[in-house]
Amino acid sequence: MTANSERGSAGRPARVSTRTLRDGAKKTVLPSGLRIVTEAIPTTRSAALGIWVGIGSRDETPALHGASHFLEHLLFKGTHKRTALDISAEIEAVGGETNAFTTKEYTCYYARVLDADLPLAVDVLVDAVADSILDPADVETERGVILEEIAMHEDEPGDEVHDVFAEAIYGDHPLGRLISGTPESITPMTRDQINRFYRRHYKAPEIVIAAAGNLDHATVVRLVRKALAGTPLDTGPADPAPPRQGNKRVRVRKAQNVVLHRDTEQAHIVLGGAGLGRHDDRRFAVGVLNNVLGGGMSSRLFQEIREKRGLAYSVYSYAGQYADSGLVGVYAGCAPAKAREVLDLIRAELSRIAADGITPEELSRGKGMAKGSYVLGLEDTGSRMSRLAKSELLHGDLMGVDELLGQVDAVTADQVHAVATALFAQPLSLAVVGPFDSGELPA
Image (cartoon, rainbow, N blue to C red; front, side, top):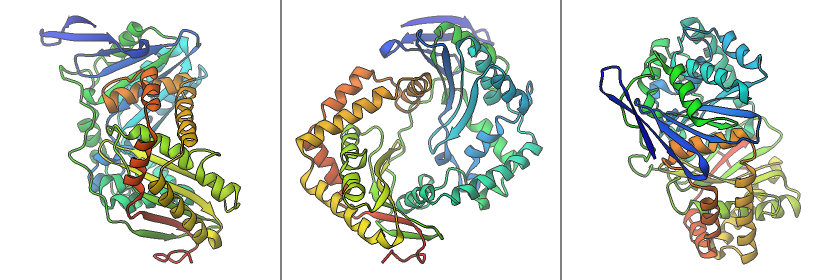
């Protein structure tokens, strides 16, 4: 680890610390607490850049429900140096791409460009995130865009059912609310409310800037510091924010059935319950379990429901993790008349895996799927950049690829059985979106 000292604006020492992480990645902490992590991949001719902010929809009050997503839209609408057209045109003029997304626990702004154009990407993206104007006219324009986005989402029942499921598990807790907000929360939200949210939460210690590709770490640090100069994020000193831990385990609702009426051709079903948080050591066993249960074409659910019986085109299981909680669920889309049969098959499979565990062959296959998926998912600069940022922001450390593969290899059949019992030998919640009367289960 090396540490370089400079003079801060008040004449006090301003320390910039840089150290090497696993797999050759590097990390620098600026005096403000903002972190910069990079991975050099000399064999590529591109670079991916991301600005990750540890703020998401779970950090919103009811009155600000949807503010994180609203802000994500607005930060591309103009700064003191650039118009909205400038922001998009400068990146597109060099063949690059830029976008953003909001989750329940963080927000990401990213760009992919040719390696020679990384300085431009840094300047444009940092400017947008650090120094946005939030013009009142843009607020009104984007309000309409977001309301249309919400309406579009409601026209996608295969997506909507997952939101219904999250609400069934978490209720009024922020983890159970829509990331986008609702028409009732977005319509009255003012520019001043969003601006206060922006300036209160977008602080340097909450931000990780990650880059991967054909780059030099010291050069990226210099580019970021230059782009930050004079912006509200160029302040300090402060320590980086620690990974979100949560105050205590999130209280979940008792198991319940929620049916949302939609005039659809299919019934969309999610059955499941509360899962594990991302800091739980059992998460590797959950990954193997998920692969065996519904993670691919060889999984139990796919084979039983689609291949043997032809009851559904899409059927899969999934596990979502937050700092202090999680979700496990099984999704299926099927003909409404077949919904009861599909539900019975899912329940039977969950009961069987909770009671009996998995076979040695399934254990081996589930591990192989987990390892292959992880390694193959690191074949481009964007995924490598995301890995760096999520490791730093969510875990506070970068687990090496070999170490992660070792954790998967160490999973035993007994561990998978234990976690299956813990997750599925409990009353489960059901979410259904389809042509059924609200509140009534499909017959």
